[in-house]
Length: 382
Image (tube, rainbow, N blue to C red; front, side, top):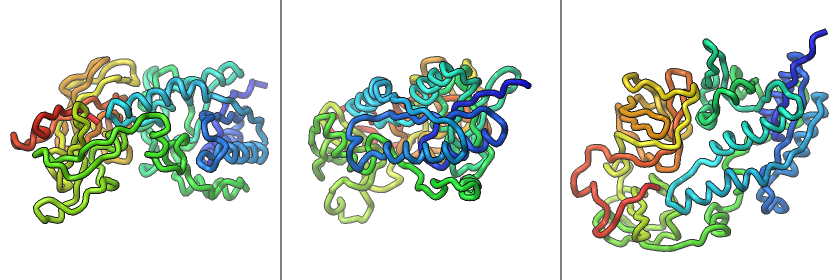
């Protein structure tokens, strides 16, 4: 009898990974569960749920009839993900730690550990797909467009994709929950986790204040007029409307205020009025720290789709430059609040070809007056 292929599944305690493991077991694979503990700080209070998640993961493994192991990757997480998270915020950018966590922990530390256990492949509950074409492994969007998570996986390479399976790639979320309910999995109606695990339900400002010193300063208009006080530039992101604490509106009109720029040199937050203000719109961006899934930079004469944030519809674009170190993207339509530190992810139809970290964006078709920051200011991304 041929040996069953061994697949180690990352069991998080949630319904998605539970069903992924269940389906693989039903398909005849030799399945083992692995629970990853990625955060130590504050794990004794209500803000992080890793203990309950482990209980749920063990219950799932018991119900399915598979072994499960718990592994602590918190040291690797703090060194490779959290330190970068803090560094980016301190520099005035807005990072996406989920992207880095996938590349550095789930598909590196976890993958290496699984291979040491004798696994042939690993699996997770991500909504995405992998296929092999002419010897190359491609990352595809999930069938369920509302749950597609390929955006967070664009940093994976050929070696990682070759060892990965996404059992939920062809399923819709509603069907996943129904499978879990039908098979008697206790977490079938467990609420999906949102946000960043190590922050949990606590206020974001409270969390960052524990690791980075706050540096309050002025909120100003593009004319340099002071309209409020910010709590620290790291607490704000481009396009932010809520939580600015600006009383009233300029010139008596009713347009809302939005964060348009961070003046790092003078510690000032630059705001504008109106969702469609020119300073919130960009027609070109530059990205760095690139990863091309095929191993080669894409053609620059083709038309692609790109996302500058998760859940955004693909925006038609062309690449005027694409190398291993820098990518310049021109959009067919202006993009709103393109944010340095976030990920640019590029698609060719349903295939994710890679992307990088947004370094800067060019304001689209703006007047000389709107193009500048306040008098004496020096614009910085973030």
